[in-house]
Structures are given as structure tokens and as C-alpha cells.
Amino acid sequence: MTRRGTRFKYEPVDGSDVTSSSDESLRSEDKPFRLKRQISLFSGVCLVVSMMIGSGIFVVPTGVLKYCNGDVRTSIAVWGVGGAMTMVAAFCVAELGASIPESGSWMTYLHYAFGPFPSFLYTWMVVISANPESLAAQIIALGEYMTKLYFKDDCEVPHADLLKKLLGLSVAMLIMGVNITRVKLAVRLQIFFAFGKVVALVGIAFVGLMQLINDRSVATSNFFPEHVNVTGHGTQILADSQSHIGVAGLSLALYQGLWAYDGFEAITLVTEEVKNPARALPVITCIAVPLVTALYLIVNVAYFSVLTPTEMLSSHAVAVTFGQKIHPFVAYLMTLSVCLSLVGSLNLTFLAIARIPFIAGRLGHMPEFLSMAHIRHYSPVPAILLTLILGTCMLLSSNFDVLVTACLFTNWIFRGLTFLGLLYLRKKRKDLYRPYKVYKATAIFATLISMYLMAVPLVFQPEPLYLLSLVLFMVFMVMYLLITRGKIKMTGIGKTGRFLQKLLLVAPTSNQVQER
Image (tube, rainbow, N blue to C red):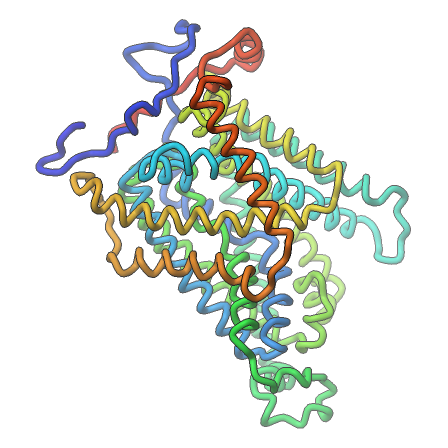
């Protein structure tokens, strides 16, 4: 451990380095082979914004409004509270990322705080279940909206389900190729998609503002129903909107809204590729999360300036319904915007999410081969390919709700454990250099938020399907025991690994941290 004045700099966890490959000719002992720091402050903000703004803001408002019993004002308040809670969690992640400048986010922090076991469980739960399911859902959704661009609603498309999957998968493969061969281009594309998403949301906000200027009747009836003669304006406010909204409804509405804020930790998945992460991570967090929160609030106000609660609750794609209410051409633009949003999410999956098996291979949680990167393009090719292969396997069935719901529930368990790890490291590693530090109360509040989000689906909407997480836990626990007893080996490169290494032109990487 090296000193920086009277403080200590971060160093990798002892014993976490993977065994080096026998093919030493592909790298130099004196100059470790590692990913390049190519993500600037602006690129990092775009990455987080693009990760957070997915298809959620175009779909989730319906669920939030439903659990608020059609009460528009309560729905807007839920979006604001969700943004504040996300900001608290993001600040804690920024401290961990600045103090432990390794890629991998939750997986790396769990490993550093509590050792390999919880990190191993999290890794396999995410890599095998959550991420492939999410990728498959994005591919299907993209194919769905792509067909809307070319076919009218009354047009019968032969083999529609297969066509949607093939269209989405074709775009995913194209985006994967860019991420493998042109990392800088992938980052630039992410900037473009992030900009496109923001433009789409600003466009919705602008249209909503114009509607407020021209005709305030819908907005007035939505936000001030007690002062409006409802039938006189031709709108229909749900009778339940005047009823009492209980704790269960508010909790489930908040749970829905927070799903749209998911992805706030995206920059910590690629910490090793961020320029000056000690300074950049907190700044990126302070810019990206409030920006997304403000956009979400403005867009929801815009939605309610055009749509009544009944119209929103009957819509599966709020942005498209919003556009149809204004003009058919606006509806076309909204559909195109959702497509670009989903393509951006696909790009981010390969740019950031695919780094999880890459780091897992380095830590020895998954085969070492996954920790290798291309010797010329500096991209984690094996990890990216694995992500697409598993996502493609999930396309064999389009019913992903059970596994996705269970894995999202599991994610908050590990996030709460990570926030506890932050408090634990304050005691265990007082000598750790922390260029950015949150208040202790902030970390405690983030932990309580995670516990609350773990309890919400169990208490207010219990389903036997959550037992699926327990089954996966048991399977991966047995796997971990077999690995620790030497029955299964994750390190070392066998004949198959050497063949793939030569085929893909990849080499082992170093987890030695570059000077910040």
C-alpha cells in the first residue's frame, strides 16, 4: 500500500488477482495490459443519463398513476421522492467508486467489504439471470417499436413475433460489433443516444407547454379536479382519485417509479475507463441524477397537460398515446424516439453491463477467460459475447416477467448490503483514501431505503414467484462451495481457453490501478 501524504491510496484486494495465463507473449511484465481511460466527464454524464432514461419513462407513468388511485398530484410527488431517494443511493455509490477505482460496481464493492462470497452470489444472479433477461426484453421491445415504424396498426404481419425478435436481435448484433471493434465510437454513440433521449423528453415537455398555453382545461382538471366541472370539459376523472391512498398504494407507486430511475450506478461499472475517477464520479452523479429527475418531473407534467388519467391508465406506451392525441406525425416521432432510446439501452448493455462478467473473471468468480480483452481494440470481447449469447437464449421464450421481477427484487438486497459495506469500511479501513465522502447519515438512510424496497413487494404484493430468487441462491451457494473445495476451477486457461484466446485475439488484463 502506497502513501499519499498521510493518507493511503486504494490497492486491489489481496488474493483477488487471477492467475496469469501461460501465454506471456501477448503482454509485457513491465507494462501491465489494461483497459484505456477513454471516458471523459461529459461522456460519463451521458452514459449515466442514457442508462437511467430507458423505456421506463415512456411506460412507467401508467403504473405510478394506477397505484396512486388516479391522483395526479400524488403521482407527481412520487416521482420527486423517487428522484431524491435515487440521489441518496447514488452519492453512496460515488464514494465507493472514488475510493475503490475498479470497474464492477456492486460486485467489486461487496468483494472489497465482505469478501468473495456475497460478491460471488451477486455476480451469478446478475450475469446469468437479470442481465440476459433485461437484454432480451430490450430486444423484443425494440423489435415491437421497429415494426410500428413500418407497419400500420391494422396491418397483419406474418410471423410477427419472430420478425420482432429478429429485427431487435439484428440491431443488437450490430451494436455489439461496434462495442468490440470501436470502443470510442460506442462511447460517442452513447453520447448521441443520450442527447437523443434528452431531446425527446424536452420535445414532450415543449409540446406539453404549448398545450398549456393553448388549452389549460385538461391540465386544470387533472391537477385541480375539485375546482372543475368535469363533464363540462369532456374528461373523465376516476372516482377513485378522490379516495384515500394508503401506504400500500404509495409504496407500490414508488417502487414502480424507482424502476425508471434504475441505472444511476452505471458509471461505476466502467470506473477503470473513466479519466480521473476520484474527481469525475461525484461530479457525474451530481449532474446526471438531478438532470434526469428534473426531466422526469417536467415530462410527467407535460403528459398530464394532454392526457386524462383514464387515457393514461389505458395506454401501454404513454409517449405514443401522447403523440396520437396531438398529431399523427408527433406519434411517429414518439415511436422513433422510443426506438432510439432502446438502441441506446442496448449499446449501454454492451458498453457497461458486459463489464460485470469481465470483472468477475478477474476476481475468480467466473472463468478467467472472461477477464481478457482484445489486444488491439482493448474491449472485453469474451464478456460481451457471453452477454449477447445468454440474452439470445432468453429470446427462445418471450415470458420473462417471473425471472425479471425476482431478480430486480434480489438486486435491492445486494444494494442494501453494499451500503452496509460502506459503513463497515468506515470502521475496517479508516486508512483508505476517500477523495469524496458522504455523511454517515446518508449511508444509513440509503441502507434503510434498500430495506424498505426489499419489503415493499413482500408485504404489499406478495407472490410465490419470489421463491425463485431463493432457489437461485441455493444453486450458486453450492457452486461456491464446490469452487472453494477445488471441485470446480475458475482460474487458469485450458486447451479450449487457449483456442478461444487465439481465435478472438484476447489477452489477460491487469487490475493495477492507473495513477489518477
